[in-house]
Length: 86
Image (cartoon, rainbow, N blue to C red):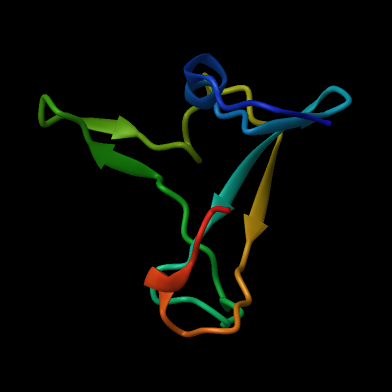
């Protein structure tokens, strides 16, 4: 497994790779701590800085994403501000 944090891979839709498969991790915690989501949300389109509609991560065929990793967070708190990346 190789994890990528550089801008080039992030803009290509690659957070990590296993062998030859590229994964984009999607983590949702705002208002979702300790809850299993019945449905997931993907960015289909968005308004860019110029005010034009642009394909989002899920619809953009130019990305190198092969698979999506959907992550839910279970914590000993309900306060998302108490979470740490350490």
